[in-house]
Length: 164
Image (cartoon, rainbow, N blue to C red):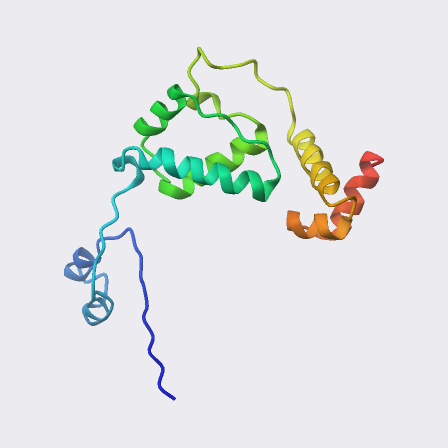
């Protein structure tokens, strides 16, 4: 039986430079370097950051069962000028954190649009989220645990602590 495999490799390192500095095997470099696709960092991709943020908001609101967080023009402008050292992963994590907290961090909001800070603790956010997932599942704790990626025992323990 014949098998035809293709591998895709991704790196943020300069492999050609690493070969020249004898930090990467030359023979391996030529095996994996069939075709190069240069992907500029997020900070150099203009409005792509806005489109990716909208995509992450859409997907994560469904996945987490959390309400969307609005993006005004000042926030979009901040997204366009931010350096994004963590690239797309940092953007996704920022969106997820903002959905869970119900707002974007203050460093991404202008003072004109900044509302009063919420005094919610992480425990409050966790409780609201778990209870909303339980409501979505009609009280099915096994299904809620599966959706949340935790054990049923965790859901049982937290509900008992909350008298829920």
